[in-house]
Amino acid sequence: MVKSMTGFGRASSKEGNERSFSLEIKSVNHRYIDINIRMPKAMISLEEKIRGKIKEKLSRGKVDLFINYKNYGKGQSLVNLNMDFAKGYAKALMTLKEEFSDFKDDLSISLIARHPEVIQIEEQEESLDEIWEEIEVLLDESLKSMVHMREFEGKKLKEDIILKTENINNIVLAIEEKSFVIVENYKLKLEERLKELMDKVDVDENRLAMEVAIFADKAAIDEEITRLKSHINHLRNTLDLEEPIGRKLDFIMQEMNREANTIASKSTDLEITNLVIDIKNILEKIREQVQNIE
Image 1 (spheres, one colour):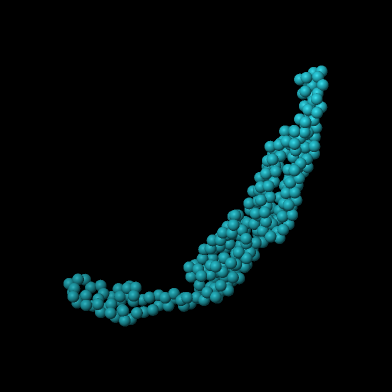
Image 2: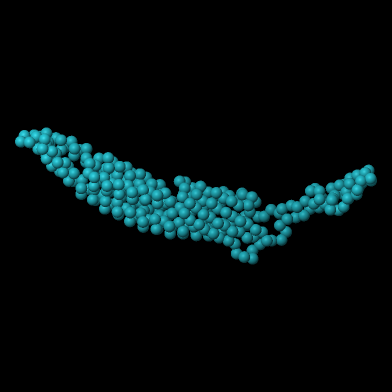
């Protein structure tokens, strides 16, 4: 199945839950699979699981995943009071007050509490297993949405590539028809030219046949046309495969372009040269589309 590498998906937790997650995933074309994940540090240990889940669904593309998280539950943090340290700190401050009685006194509870060792806030660790259960469901949902978009875009790409391929095939058939008369036309022009240069002199038929044979060998494009037809069939068959086909299509494009260049280099006929230019123009458009196929 043809799939585009461009897609987007989103999923969010239901309202009313203690924990709220929102996931956004997007992808664009890339030579390989490149996954970038942005999520809270507390969930960093889940990264490999998330990557594995994405790779089950996608084989190519630059993928960006954004995970936002909020916890509305009570008791997320514990406040610990270090009373022994507070008493010792207060005692030390009182000693300073007695020692430096001439200075302004600003000793207060807020001053003591301001010391980081007096009141400590401890973040409660949440269950990563519970978080993964929620994340996995949302990840599946967002991936499903994105894959559906990639399949839809891929379908459109396939339809357009098939249409362009038919145009190429028609041009190849036109080149094939003209290739049969190139040698014959060359022979006639050569005979006419020789008659003009050697009026009333008999033309050596053997020599003429040899010249025509040499030209025919140099100008023959039968093999290139046959290979182009084969590549066209291979392209059509590849578009129907139920697997990632982007790299295969890219290789086929290179081979088709190579055959078109060879035909152009051999051609002595202006019409055939122009037809090859048309083929190369269409191939370039297909190649750009193929760059976005998974």
